[in-house]
Length: 375
Image 1 (cartoon, rainbow, N blue to C red):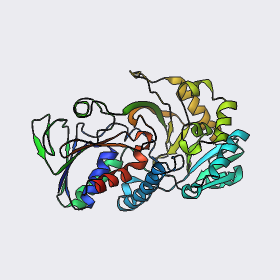
Image 2 (cartoon, rainbow, N blue to C red):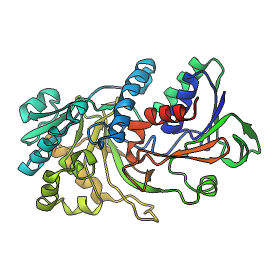
Image 3 (cartoon, rainbow, N blue to C red):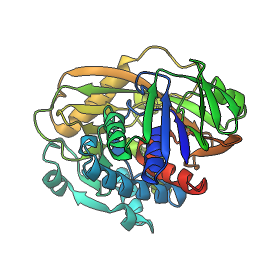
Image 4 (cartoon, rainbow, N blue to C red):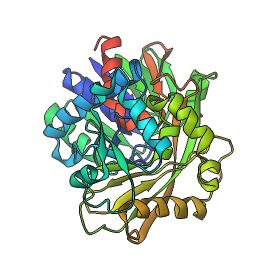
């Protein structure tokens, strides 16, 4: 079988991985020289802890298995089973964590409630003030800025001539069953075409699926100079409870009603997520913006807020900020759906809208596509 994958981000690359792994020939087409969207502009977290039960959690857990397996084959991914800690400072935050531990699926997430001293044994860099911490051993991380590069190199090596990456070509038109034309005028024919175009929802995607139930979301993030010591886990703050479905409970209702977010955090729908990169720097964020048109600039107040929260957990000022950026991802308008998968033409399928789950769930999303299409 010959498969065309349109899109060089992590969802597209994982579809290419699945097809090659099953013995097929793959042509992957990317409109930029390299993918430059949300697949690079994220935390690199394989984030199981906050996922909703049912399909979303099952997908995240399966993806976590696949990431570890692929990471063993592709060391350049920088896969590490680092887990995550959410430090807790108030009784209401503690109550939300206790409710999470009482969920029937808590064991699948490998939750544990730790004292501050126990949390510091796992992550000694957390020298700031907190009373307890929610630990999730199933969370992990990879290096988002370089993951696709290493995956593609592994595909070239293992596929023995069955994998081709075409950069700088925008697919403009479907010209027949499982056939597309790019902006160079070249026609690419296959047995199946997967459009994994991320947040690019205009042009060909709009023509093929004009009523797509997907929206775009913008966020701001930043990265620091090296911390100078290991940050051995990913770190979140209790504001993250407000945005992840795994924490929904009467205790969360009480937190939302009785413990207000800082005004700047509420205005920008903020949480702290923090992951250390291989070079020692910290990736920190984030904000959420849903109303179109998005701002074209980045705002300093959210950065100052999240830097202060991160520093308060570390008990020290952050290293110098060396990068700031904004990113946009595609999210199903029905946020309970893991992804939008739709046949949009003969032999052509669109896979988009995983939202903030894209990096986490991409291997399992691609595996499901491959199974459903009978690859």
